[in-house]
Length: 142
Image (cartoon, rainbow, N blue to C red; front, side, top):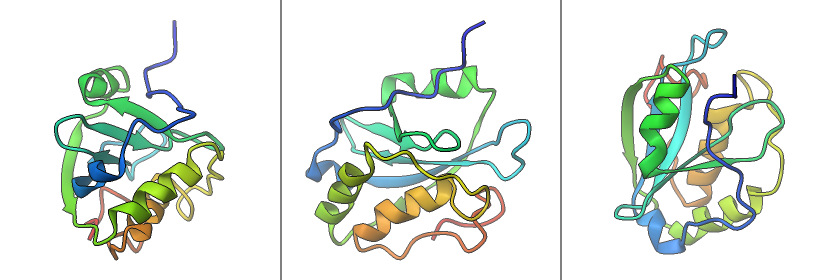
């Protein structure tokens, strides 16, 4: 059996600076060994993508809007909630994502995980949004 769909790494981001005018933190249910859930960023309005870190020492993965339900279904996940994030500096978030696009993300479970990846991108865009405990199901991404 093949692995469930998690998106694909990209060597060039399909997102443009203007896409970062619409950003949401999306919280989905966790995996078997992850009761805290999982965080993805939803970026763009009409041509939108989800971007996330899907495991230890992996590159960021991109999921086009048209494949989001496939991602949820194949991974046995459900969307729990999403929060709009206002970015005073969309260029900063865009540039940070481009910087991270080809760097495997060092995964430290609760301390350096999918949530901290999303926080790093939105904070580069001037937002203070994030989570204190990096447990997406347990707290607001704000």
